[in-house]
Image 1 (tube, rainbow, N blue to C red):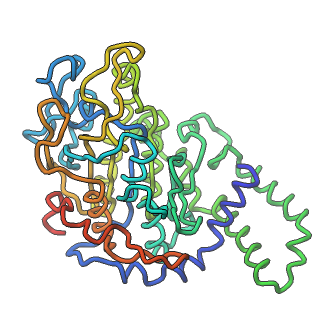
Image 2 (cartoon, one colour; image 1 turned 60 degrees about the horizontal axis):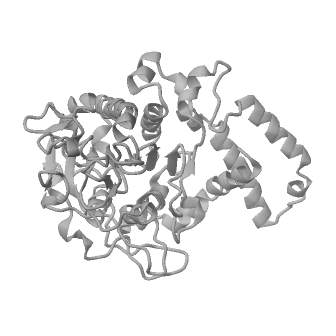
Image 3 (tube, helix red, strand yellow; image 1 turned 45 degrees about the vertical axis):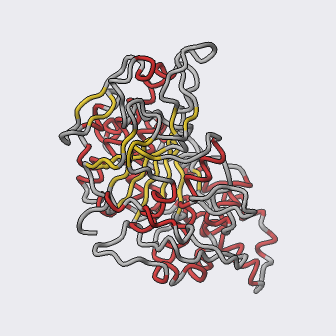
Length: 436
C-alpha cells in the first residue's frame, strides 16, 4: 500500500463521525415496510466481462452445436430446474437461489452496460449517479458499528466508472488488493491486504510519527486534529480486530478447500467473514469472463471456480443461519452471444450480448428454487417476463430496507432519486419469500 492509498484509507475511515451526521436517520426515512427484517448485508458477485447464460443458468441443449458447442444441461435438486453441466455443485443448491432468465437491456459496451446495471440509468444526463453499493453503504453507515469501511471490494474495483458518482469519496469501495488465496503460503502470522506484515506496518507508523513535526504542532486547530484522528482511525482499521476478517489462516484447511484454493473461491470465503462483521456491502469482482476467443476452453477453468466458490458461500451462509439476512446477487454487465463464433480469430468465442442473459439472486428476502422469465429456444431474446436493470435493482434496494423512489441525499443538493420513481412497476416481486 503506497502513501496515496494509505491517505485514501485514512480519509475513508476518519470521517465516520461525518458519515453518522450525514446519513443518521436517512435509512429510517427511506425505509420500506417489510414483514420480516431487511437484509443486513449485500454480497454482489460481479462476473466481470459478461457470463454466457448458455454455459451457466440457461442452457440450450436442443439448440444445436452452433449454439451449445456440444455441452449440455444437468438436473438440480429442484424438480424442473436444469442448469449447465459446468455447474454441478450449484445444481445441488438450487433450492437456495432463484434464476432470472430474461434479463435484458440495450447496450453492448462494457462501460455503459456496467453503469446501467449498477445505477439503473443510461449515461448522458450530465450526472454520474452512484452505484448501488455506494448508496447502500451510505444509508447503512449510521447503523453499522464495525471498524472496516462500509463498502469493500474483493479484490479490485470494477474500473468502469466512479462507483460513488456524485457522493463523497468516502463511499467508494475499499479495494483490498492482493490475492487472498496467497495467504496459504504465509507462515509468519497475519499479513493484511497489501502484503505488509503487521510488524512492518507498526514500524512504518512509528517512523511516520517520529517525522510528523507538523502533526505535533497541530495544537487546537480542529481541521488538523481531525486529520490526526483520521490517521489513528486508519491504523485501527489496519491493525484492529476487525482486520482479522481478511486473515483466512484463521479458517480450517477443510473450510478453505471447501471454497476452492483460487482467487475467486477465497474471495467468497472472505466475503462470508465480512458478513459476520456486519459489513453492509461487499463486491466480489470475478474476472476472466470476457471470452471472445476460445470460450469453451476458458469455461473449463472459470466455470468450476464459480461453481465451487458460489455454492460453498450459499451452503456456508445457510449453515450459519446468515443466508436469510444476507442478500446475494450474481450477474455480469450483459451475457454472451448465444451463437458461437467459430471463425477466425475467435475460434469458438462468444461476444457481447445485451438482449437476453441470466442473473441469480439468493437470500435476504429472495426465495430459492424459482425461475423468473424465460428465453427463446436459442437464448437470443426473452420469451416471457422480461426484466430490466431497474426492475432488479429496485427489488434489491427494497429487500435491503431502502425505498428506491426516495430522494438521494447528496452534497450538491441535487433533486434526484435513488432510482427513477416509476421504476418499481415491474420489480421482481415474484421472487420474494412469502413472509416478506
